[in-house]
Length: 85
Image (cartoon, rainbow, N blue to C red; front, side, top):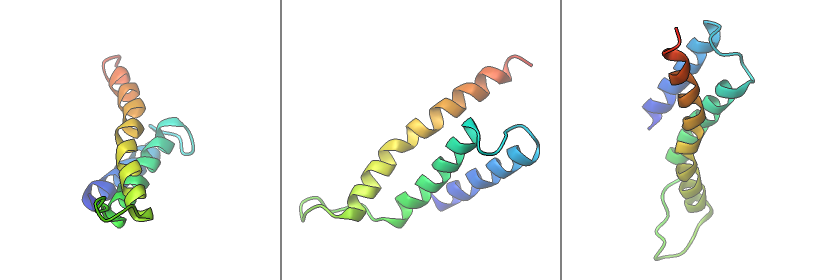
């Protein structure tokens, strides 16, 4: 997942430098949150829930659950604009 995170960061940088995305607005912020969430998922191990909960386990669980919701708005907007040109 670190490779995916690095790739996402590079895509974000390329889109901002090309002027396709404006920094600090909409899709750029969501893509940045996506990138950070991927790093958090890797940094905190999945908890063994039979032993008991841990803070790292909760971070891993809820960050992972939120990843698809971070990508969906950006994906819809870009795919809607792709057919228009």
